[in-house]
Image (cartoon, rainbow, N blue to C red; front, side, top):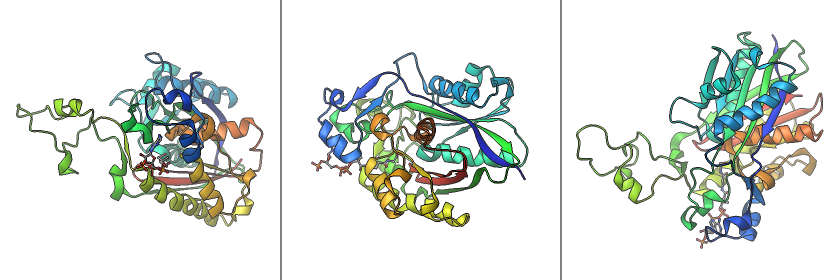
Length: 349
Ligand code: UT7
């Protein structure tokens, strides 16, 4: 059976750099707090009214396509992972298909937040291994800057997240010494709301009676966006940071170890671990738990913040560009986030 290889990788970040200091204009925070608690120094925000998740995803895709030595016309399937789609529906998959001029190929949208890229990679791996597709474009892209609360109320979320995109081209290879060795996906919806953006949504308070909107005057409709919701400005992402942190530092090492065990490897065999860039302190916990050296773990959250579905391909791309990922290297990708959902992929570059 063929293995799935990453034949090309690309990334894109907007040129608008936003420092921690700039955020102090809008909220009660400080460069010191942000760096100490998260490691983040700056992040990127898209050009307002011009760029979107789909457009920056397409920019990353163009680079990945070129580096794979193919043309857009060779792509036979698209997978787009994001939590910040341009539209409620349709998803970013078809928008990127339109931007890149891909004709009639399937486009799938993945809604798994921080682990969206890992879920997408696992799906692509199955399609490639079965011989269904030959050139899959997988994108992880995110525009957080349009939807965050930049007042002090939302500071625990808004200082962390940034905009960016990463993309890969996945192809079959008969070489059994290369490519994706395994993928491992998990979820636990018990704490679905701990990191969530429920509004505006179609839940009508069904999961949480305390979130039930006032009964609208008309019999049908009218509970998607209520005046009450607008008055309370209750339409921003919510995060119980400590709850997420505590779970992440357990599940991430666990899912990396699961990938290593499945392939008879030890942590010391890893050339590079690319953890989801959620918080530098989380990465450091993971590194300690697995007893990895500094040069075995790659982080770039300092420059981009947490870009959720884009963070793993953005970091992998930068590591590859710096020559830190070489042919034959054992590389592990791992992510944990909202849902909760988490996963890992072990690959030989
Ligand atoms: O990618 C998806 C997964 N997401 C994550 O993995 C995020 C995981 N969680 C985290 O990274 C951390 O929990 C945060 C960085 C979000 C927060 O750090 P923390 O050390 O857990 O802080 P905290 O939430 O316990 O808050 C400590 C204090 C609070 O003040 P009081 O109650 O002690 O007076 C917060 O109000 O820090 C305050 N605080 C801030 N202060 C300055 C919260 N956000 C900020 C801020 N600037 N931006």
